[in-house]
Length: 164
Image 1 (cartoon, rainbow, N blue to C red):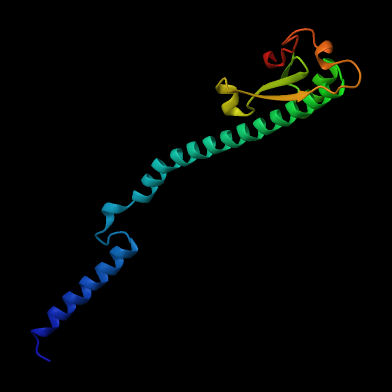
Image 2 (cartoon, rainbow, N blue to C red):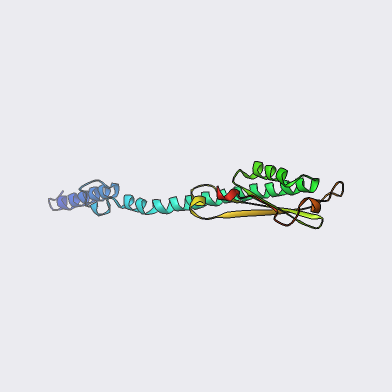
């Protein structure tokens, strides 16, 4: 081998070693300008991910609350149509929708309605005045006193459960 070829081969080997060390992120390898970039990107992305998670959890809490309110309104309307009074309807509504739910009973001829409203639980629900409601109608049964006679005027039985 000629002595002139050795230095070129050594230079190429040294350049290859520097490239491998830079790709691995080893200190002192000449690639120190990118150190900490992943940490900075993570610090920027983490609040966005947490905000997205909070919005998803608040939305799912609102969905579950709406389903509970609708079920409570349907059960209350069925009970009122069967002949139960407004106090019994309130007990049914509070059992299904929670103790903070408010109910209103109204009648329109032979049709009765129960409106149930409540706030969304959780941190977002307490920060925002996010109140949901559901209404169910039922036709009063013909046996016994009519449902319209049991409810004196629309909205006659309104509970202030939301103030709690």
